[in-house]
Length: 506
Ligand SMILES: Cc1cc2nc3c(=O)[nH]c(=O)nc-3n(C[C@H](O)[C@H](O)[C@H](O)COP(=O)(O)OP(=O)(O)OC[C@H]3O[C@@H](n4cnc5c(N)ncnc54)[C@H](O)[C@@H]3O)c2cc1C
Picture 1 (cartoon, rainbow, N blue to C red):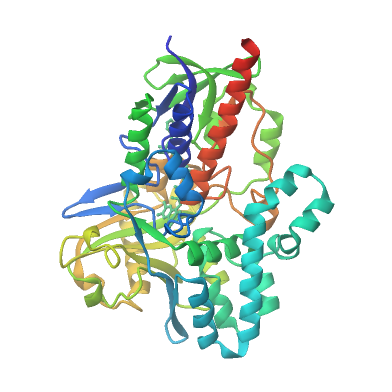
Picture 2: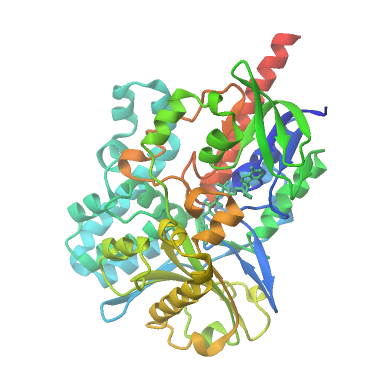
């Protein structure tokens, strides 16, 4: 039986980063992936003349060459920075609520303040205060909170993370309503709730603050060739360092003995032994399906009882026979809503009723190579929970999917009226598509529901089986940056543990 130091289950962002880091850190690593390509959400697919980006709307955390941020270091250390070209987006987003507001926010911290003050002069001072709070909450969250958490001492927390303690753990709506009286301004600056999956009343203020700050200061990015290029680069770097990867090869069982992992059984029936398993599959799959039932730690069982499933998404991938200008697209990312009330938009996420809010991303506005000349690559998205889709009878699925797609296009056409007119290619993904490709319960794309009372800030790691680590959107926040970071930090923990074990055996 072949032996590896580490087996990584799943080649999503978390698994890829972890595998590349453990192999490059000197530990023999096997990477297993059910699908025939790497990336999980971070993939692309081809239809006609278009290669469609599956998931990445805006990559955060990279920073510019003159002002680098955490992802640049991670990608450098994994040897992929030179293999991939990143495309900077010029705007944060446009929010269009027909008849109410239509504002584009620039990807610049100073520019953001200026734009907000121009549109909402009566809130001038509150905007300055808000931006100061966002900056401090974000910097404390990155720089001092991890140390304060480790100290387990409330005094250290209060001294070193005063703004985080005062604002960070509250809901975004709570803090914004305290600072601002203009409802349109609150709606405008809380649009990024769509990237977390819970409306402003249920979203941590610290999540909103750090997203706004990080995207505005360190810029939003696309990737040339789509996020698939980065996933491919991570696999290449992993293989160059000597790693073994198996596609079309799911893990079937995590093997244990005396409360610790001993190996993995592949779906081919083969077995390999190992000292550590890093699972990028959802913890529900990892603990309920891959482990023998009697191995499920009580702590994890109890944790699962209080978890709620995060949202999935409904996506229409469109290849349009027109330029972005012909369609009227002025910003790569737009949020579109028929109401100022994000809570009402969120309430529709569990039903087939017409969506009240959605997003549209145009990839070739900032990167002409993202579509053939004269054409456009566009994704229309609205968040949807998987439950309602799981009630659809198989023979009704196609009809239901296209009927819902019509409703989402109706919404987007309130702002970009000629979408239907220009369609050359169309592919539609529902939460059932996400379930199939990601193997996540309900097709969840951001992991568990991230509410103030259930955020990863206050949750403990899902542990209880020696040598078994979970990585990805379920153990951190969902999204590209958090899952890459989780992969890297988990790999560091695994390397440290394995090096300690080796030192003890010398
Ligand atoms: C439509 C859409 C839009 C999004 N937009 C953004 C955005 O703009 N910005 C952003 O930051 N985030 C966005 N996200 C979210 C982000 O893509 C995800 O949160 C993140 O990529 C999840 O990474 P992960 O590491 O959890 O792995 P996943 O992507 O969930 O991948 C897990 C992998 O594990 C594999 N696997 C599962 N079980 C097994 C098994 N038993 N054996 C082997 N392999 C297994 C799966 O096949 C899959 O490849 C979006 C997601 C979607 C779907």
